[in-house]
Amino acid sequence: MKFFSTAGKVSGVSFEDAMLLGQAPDGGLFMPEEVPRIGSSLLAKWRGRPFSDVASLLAERWVGREIQGRVLYRLTREALNFKVPMRQVTDRIHVLELFHGPTCSFKDFGARWMARVMDYFLQRRNLKATVLVATSGDTGSAVAHAFHGLENISVIVLFPHKRVSPIQELQITSLRGNVTPVAIKGVFDDCQRLVKQAFADPDLHLLNLSSANSISIGRLLPQSFYYVYSALNLFDKGILFSVPSGNFGNLTGGLLANRMGIPVRCFIAATNVNDSVPRYLRNGTFKPRSTIATLSNAMDVGNPSNFARILSLNKNSHREITSRIVGYRVTDEQTLATIRNVYRSNGYLLDPHGAVGWSALMRHLRKNPGQKAESVLLETAHPAKFPEVIKRGIGIEPLQPKSLRNLTRNRKNVQHLPADYRNFKTWMRDTRPL
Ligand SMILES: *Cc1c(COP(=O)(O)O)cnc(C)c1O
Image 1: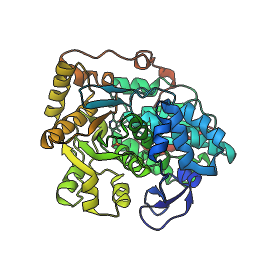
Image 2: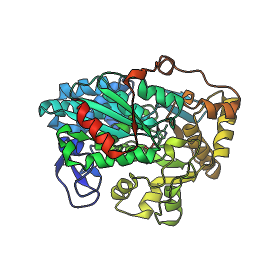
Image 3: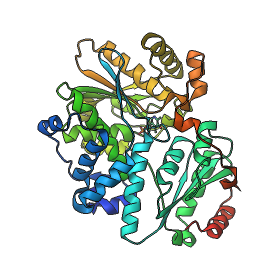
């Protein structure tokens, strides 16, 4: 499989190079030059197989001969070794639970697959790398956990001291070994600035710095696997997918699955008040705005980077995009009301991100009463990651799953640094994590 850049100046790039580069050298994002087809007879044949099997079969079609089949199978099974249950909550609404990975958010799919594949490529080239990430919460914990214990990569996670949620901080700081958490005295933007400066600094080149950015093709591809998996059981129906969206990587994964051949009625782009994409769908102009903080904070993205991929997949045609995607904007009040109502009426507890998806789906179904499609809501996080919001919604805090209950802080491992580049650089050089 070869990849081209959405900025138009680069093409014919191997999966391995696209993966290790992250972003294309012309500043664009990598996209596949062709999409593998999965016909309805294959879908029928795969029905009933466990998720990790289906994921391995799909990975093989995307990666081709660049990784030996047997090896890719093992990497994919190790990465995606958790369940992906689909719960029927009403007679036509199914919730696909994407939060059963180790950090309880759907980011585990992309981060874990990417980590293993990257580690494998580095080992094959006899190289080591340092992954450097700045996080305001979910991404950092998913990335740190994904790379934890791998042999050829060490991870440095920068987070703003006392500015991530208590659970997120525990998730970041409980790891040892090849993961080093660094609490920066500052805000998220300070962390991001230090990371950018480090990448641009020739003195640090010997650390072979690498990002585990959400725009990496290695994170995007596995986000198409669970769409195909959910279609195996509903495949003759034409599905309506509701996707809680921020940076739009998840929804782009769905568009790729649709190109592979799964029958989709349409995608609902469910956003909070950071609604650049729903506004584009309405009036045809893409005008990013600065980010607004909301209760569904993993979707607080004013300028979603994967929008370039959506444009590229649809040849920049507004008409084509609106034939596949409809958009809805959901406020914090609507999010809280949805958590409360769905819990009371259906006995199902949504997290704030899933609640945005549910609210958008309901509005769409009310506007299109004749639509007979089965609906699948992608639930992207476990509600226990957001106890304060859930308490505001239903009055009680949710029960924690095992993976969140068993976290223990490992204070000794956490570094504390000021938001100052010279300091940070000296620390990086002295520490030499590899
Ligand atoms: C990152 C995230 C999203 C948004 O996904 P995108 O691919 O950025 O659109 C939604 N929900 C949760 C819980 C997330 O962590």
